[in-house]
Image (cartoon, rainbow, N blue to C red; front, side):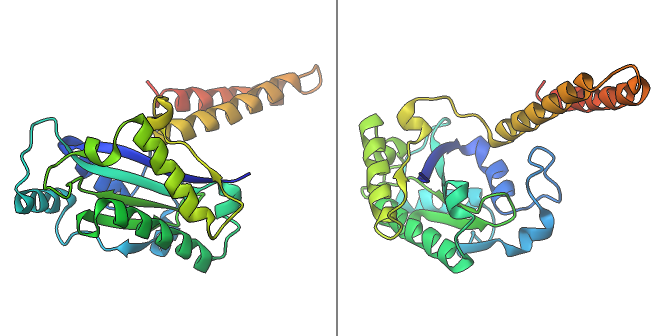
Length: 240
């Protein structure tokens, strides 16, 4: 069964710029994420346009306007990843995909305040369409507090339940997902997760090439195996 996916990532001041560069496609190439097809980036679209200047400047403006007190280690932004299982999302026609992301945007806006949303951008240039929605965690009483908005484990569970109820009201085949904050599992960066998958695939190719070597094709197959090993080692080095 496909899952409705909602994930949160807290961002302190130091992590905001890198997040913006990725979400808004401000780099010419993404070595750490080769799944990004820059030829298709023109198909990305916003449901909430990004700030005129930068995320950081807009965050500072909103925080100052609300009169929030901050610390050096304050969570300045929450990044939300919104999507669904690939087998579900990839079979939806474009207008249904947009409807999915629009419904999710409405859900988040109701809970965090439309005025606090920095950007909501849908990426169509990777394997599975998904939306990055970033917001400043300012509470109704003008405090900067991601903890208050997202809450504890129980509150995160309620977030997941409410999100699933909203999305499954239109797409009833969707199951309820779980966030990494809710499960307490350590988050693995997307680039590392994808790199691990590619290494596993290359390892399988190496094993296959080695098992095919015999007295009649040793030279040719050996060269192929060595080529695969060299590529595998190069990829492995990206983790170190």
